[in-house]
Every structure is written in C-alpha cells, then in structure tokens.
Image 1: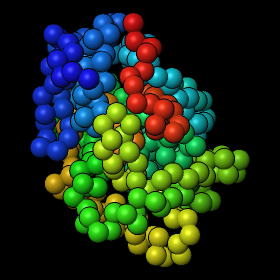
Image 2: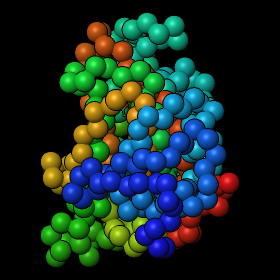
Image 3: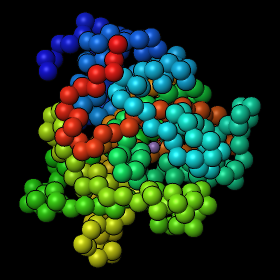
Image 4: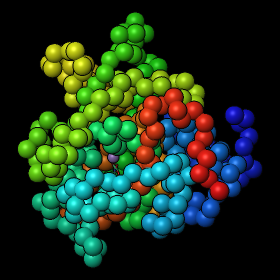
Length: 302
Ligand code: OGA
Ligand code: MN
C-alpha cells in the first residue's frame, strides 16, 4: 500500500514506538474511500489512533466504526444494566448525569477496566478495534487517563532465544477473572461460553508484525502447570507494560481514540469518582478469524 493515500488525512506520531494522532478529517460524516484507507493503514502501523475535535453522536460513532467491519454487540452485564447494544458506556454518571455511588454494581464492574486487558479476548473471535469517544472529561491533571501498551514493541524487544517456544503457545482466556469466579455480573452460561483459547503470539496480517496477546482475561497456558503459566503470563504482561512501551492518553474534550485490540493492551486509570465526572462511549469492531483472512482493508467504506 502506498504511503500517500489521502490528501486530507495527516498522521503524526505521538510516541517513538506506536500511537499516532490523525487530523484533517471529520469522522462524523461519511468518509471518502482514500481517507478511510489512510486511516486503516495508520491503524495497522500505529496500534493506537488519537482523533481530535470529533463531535460524535452514537449514530455517527457507529457509522464511522462500521468502516472497519461489523460491530460487536456487548454482552449483557452489570455495567450496561443487562441491556446489550453497540454502545458501551464507561462512566461514573447515572442516566441523569449525577455521580453514581462507588458501590453501584456498574461502577464496581467497570473497575475491571483498571487492569491491563484487551477487549473481548474472552470471545472466540476477539475484537479487532475499539473506539472510545469522550463525552464528558474530567479536568486535566486529575487522572482518568487511558493507558496503552504495545504488545508489538514488547515482542520485538523480548529476548530472541525465548521467542520460538512462546510463538507456539496457546492461552485460555475467560470473561470472569480468577478472583471473581463467583461474581454475579456474568451468568454461568456466559462464563462457560466465554472461555476460549487464543495464541500467545499473534501476527498482523497486513504487515506481518508479531505481538504478545495477553491481559487480565489470559489465565492459563495449554499444557503448562498453572503456577508456571501464571508466572509466565505475569512476566509477559509486566514486560509489555514497561514504561517504554506505554502511552498514557489524557483526555480532552472532543477526543476519540481507536485502539487495535489484536496487539495493544489498555487500562483505565483512576480518579476521584466522587468529585469529577467522566463519560466515554465505546463502539467495538468485531474481528474475523483467523487473522490471515484480514490482510486487505475492509470494503464497507463508502
Ligand atoms: C474500554 C476501556 C478504559 C477507560 O472502554 O474498553 O477499557 O479509560 N476503557 O475508560
Ligand atoms: Mn477495555
């Protein structure tokens, strides 16, 4: 794919290893194909794309996200009042815009976002991308950032002699985190259905670059004793989240951030939820399995 695809889209790195800011296009209106292709290329190269000054509504956010493929419908759980849809709301506000108490079930559920994870890794076909758009942001400097880590930069920097063994490992991911196995947020049926396997190392089908695929749902390694697997998963997660492989996004009004769930980890960071208001709307683009089927750009763009 040639580097110059669009006369409008401007891609500027925000970190030495991954993350780019994309400007020059209004994502709330239908995109020209060349603009989408430039964004698609930037997405595959940079893992995280930061868009500024985008006045998304749910409808326009859904329409832009659909350029990348079919959208996931969220599983029903405590954080969406058991009402699944294409928009997942990450917030400390109730429907009227008032602060929720810290012990509200949705608030407790969303604390899981503060562990490093990748969205929907507990589904048989894990998510391709998530797009989070800021609707209410806390004031600068009080926290509520979203942190990102590059599983790709980490893989590239990992000791080479160990890679051949890791490349062929298979990991069990579960929707319920081990410490929450009795958590009522998910039904027994969901816990069973949402226990799946994925390779420990994934390959981007567009550029062939490999990455570690771990996070809070990764819990066991096939054929390895549990304590050993836990140690290895912890080691790899700690390696991926070394400061040099991380970018922390401080949200500004109008920001929207899209991340590649196939290769980047992310986590919410805390803030004083009894004092500041924060509301983010997320759309999630479903993946296609296996990765090799996704080597060309999706064709749904106008
Ligand atoms: C998510 C998520 C982090 C945040 O929406 O998937 O993990 O900072 N959000 O809200
Ligand atoms: Mn998430």
